[in-house]
Amino acid sequence: MSKRLFDWILSSLGLLVLGPVLILVALAIKLDSPGPVFFRQERVGRWGHPFFIFKFRTMRHDPVGRGLQITVGQDARITRVGGFLRASKIDELPQLIDVWVGTMSLVGPRPEVPRYVAVYPPELRDKILSVRPGITDIASIEYRDESAVLARAADPEQAYLHEVLPHKLALSARYVDQASVWTDLQLILRTLLAIVR
Image 1 (cartoon, rainbow, N blue to C red):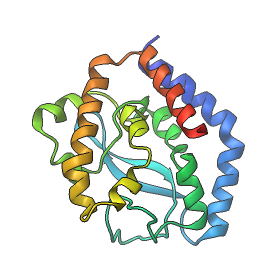
Image 2 (image 1 turned 60 degrees about the vertical axis):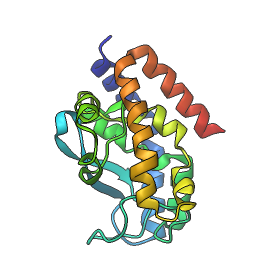
Image 3 (image 1 turned 180 degrees about the vertical axis):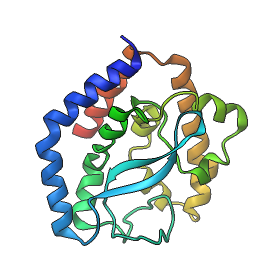
Image 4 (image 1 turned 30 degrees about the vertical axis):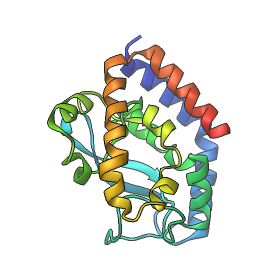
């Protein structure tokens, strides 16, 4: 089975089965704070093509886009419902739409904002952007508490650029070298176990 067919089948099933949950989450977001249900942000996809990712909004609505593009510790911008959605990773579920339309995969390197892709080393940039970005990957599992790690740094953005991002890129490059439907299934199961724990 091809990776794209695998993604399409599982994302279709996921959207059908989780439909009621997605509707309830959308209602909770609307009742909790003013603003749209979804957070749309430009990310860099396969071959460097930009796209706008789907996520449930977990922060106060900021149409101007002020502030850091990373989340640090107990970020004051996070809403009450947003805190739960982030902790449970439910905020990522709308990315099943991105998988269904083909801009993302269930498993693959997490898509970054253009600002951070601009600092990728050229050889890693080409390799990592040769595959569709994913909802989860090994770096997502290893850095599940990334915001807490960055909160301990004197300069969170510099810590992200010089400590976290290089390690993530190395893990993403390793994934590209080993990618298969079987490794994707293993990473999906590891992600589900990490969320349950």
